[in-house]
Each structure stands twice: as structure tokens, then as C-alpha cells.
Amino acid sequence: MIRRVLLLAHRVPVAGGFSLNDLAGAGGRMDEVARAVSTAFTVSNGLRRDTELTILFVAEPPPRARRIRLRGDGLRYLNPDERSTAALLKNALVRSSTLPHDLEASPGLVVGPVDPAAAITEFARRESTVWLSEDAAPYVAPASAPPSIGAILSDPQDPTPEEASLLKALGVVLASLGPVRLRASQCIDVLHNRWDAIPGAGLPDRA
Ligand SMILES: C[S@@+](CC[C@H](N)C(=O)[O-])C[C@H]1O[C@@H](n2cnc3c(N)ncnc32)[C@H](O)[C@@H]1O
Image 1 (tube, rainbow, N blue to C red):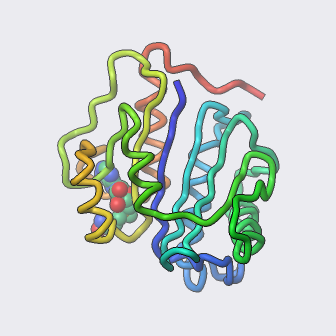
Image 2 (image 1 turned 60 degrees about the vertical axis):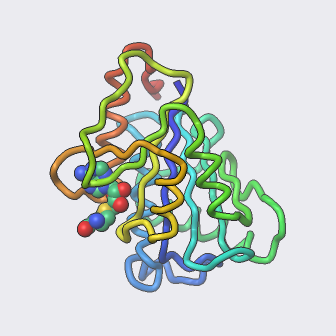
């Protein structure tokens, strides 16, 4: 079962123009985005090779908006700490900022320009994909592992009205992970935990 997560990053400067010393401020909450990467892929003594995380950096519209796709089966140089993960992402954004095409900025990490609405639509149309929201019916995991499972969530800022209308128009099922408003990175932890319990889901390799 391939696990896919789409994260909407609304405030991170799309060309990577921020200091690693100010991830939460000038970095537009890159601290939380980096934590989301960490929770998506790292476990104690291992990596989740069956996971893909797509981050849409939408603080500016196309042609400056950027997408970073990380694939667990190819990832290297991912350490569990937030600062080095933020550095990996920042470096990718900086290198991509003047390129009109995708670039594999480091193993398993592809960055490039994106049309956010098209990327959301493509992601949302995959089977077993939900849109995570605090104000929704409880998430019900499938009884057996589908080939692919996915979730869309937002950074500390809620989806914009345009993103929300697009997701509604696409008919994506809304799902809540519980009554408490969680951070995006915490949602990914909870999701993995729910997905780990699906019979046949597959579990991460141990290092
Ligand atoms: C930090 S929250 C967004 C801000 C939040 N609306 C608030 O008032 O603080 C980030 C994202 O995590 C997801 N999220 C947070 N708590 C959730 C929950 N209990 N169930 C499902 N998704 C949740 C949503 O996608 C949300 O947009």
C-alpha cells in the first residue's frame, strides 16, 4: 500500500529566501513543514519507504509556486532533526527558483514549478483520498489495504477559500482525526498510526 500525503504550505517563501535561524517567522512556518517531512518518513531506526509526501508552496501563484515531491523509496540524507530537513527543502527551492522544469535536487526529492489547482486535482482524484479537517466526520480507515491511500492537509493556515471550493467541487471526502485541533505534523503521525493498523498495509523496514 502506497501512502500519499499532500501538504499545502501557504506562507513559506517559494524561492527559499529565508534564514534557517528563523524558520517559524521569515520562513513562513517552514519549521512545521520540516516536522511534517520528518513525521512522514522517519520512525525509530528506520524510514517509511512506502510513503510519498507532496508539498505545494503556494505563497505566490504560478509561475513562482513550487512543488516538492519526496519519495520514501529513493530518499537519502534525511535526518530526523528539523533544521537539516528545512535546509534540504530550502536548498531545493533556491535551486529551482529560476528553472522552468523539474529537478531532482537530492535523491528522492524532486522540485519544480506547479499549477497548484492542477496538482490538487490530480492528487484528490486518486482512490481512498481524504481531506483532513477538524470539522468533519471521524476518519474511517479501509478494512483492507488498498493499493494506494492518501490524505490532504494544510499547514498552520487553513486552506484558502479557493482551495476549499476546489476540494469540495472534486467531491473529496472530509475526515477528522479527532476532536482536538492538531498540528499538521501531528496529523501525519496519527494517520500513519491508523494506516499501520490496516490489514496488509505493510510496515516500515527496520534499519
Ligand atoms: C494547525 S491545523 C490548521 C489551523 C487550525 N484550523 C486552527 O484553528 O488552529 C493544520 C491542518 O491540520 C489538519 N488538522 C488539524 N487537526 C485536525 C483534526 N483533528 N482532524 C483532521 N485534520 C486536522 C487540517 O488539515 C488543518 O488544516
